[in-house]
Image (cartoon, rainbow over all chains, first blue to last red; front, side, top):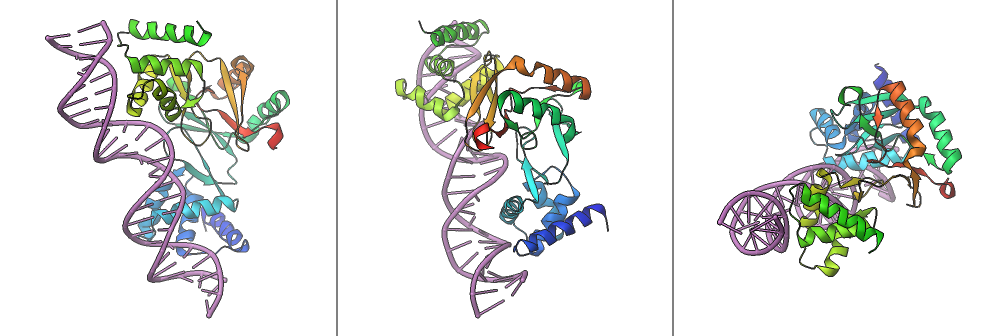
Length: 141
Length: 141
DNA sequence: CTGGTTGCAAAACCTTTGCAAAGTC
DNA sequence: GACTTTGCAAAGGTTTTGCAACCAG
């Protein structure tokens, strides 16, 4: 099984262990998110409906919310436009270019020192994974 | 005249110098933004309509866009919810708490070193003023 | 005067919600 | 069988747009 498939199985098991029911739609949504980071809800709907045309977009929104409450996925904002979804275990922060739209992944640990400094100076715990850092990539400056 | 009133006069002059027309609505909108940082468009509508009930919300949206293109104001995102408007000259970054909603202002210069490091390591110019840093304030951690 | 600007209404965009029917455990 | 989850349709919040009337320069 693919790495994404294995990740999906872990999430499905965790979901059931939390007392949630596992339906065809939920399974398909989990598989799509595990295989493709940073899709919008409507993009997830598109992927899911290729195999399961009966799954409605409201089900996708509700399932994503359920999965987020279960601590399995998380949404983030890469700039204007719809929220994007990723696995909660995703270890990267995003640098989103407002010029060309490209998104650069950077290891979370590379910002540990920044977070420590902001905590020390302002008493504030920055959560860089909810709102991406936006700006200009090297090509667009 | 108040400091906010003086700032407003500067913006109005600049707007006219750029070939834009100065209408009653535009003048009122500029005065509200100059006097109150981080209002939403609908909040600006409310303030403006106290003195000028005929000014429509679509005019406010269009004017804010015009002023932003003219480099006089800017919108920012403090988290979920509508965009917030501030003077382009505003010298502070925002730390927005996702627990209690409080917004902590920090001098832009305190992040110059962080921006320099991100530029050096990743070739990316972060624009911290467009999307606020979100997280948890000391009281909410 | 004349082209930029406005008020109004409608639509666009993304997301949430109420409800009866269907599905999971 | 009990209770959760779903599909559908409708509405929600914020912002944008088309158009004729209006007004600043």
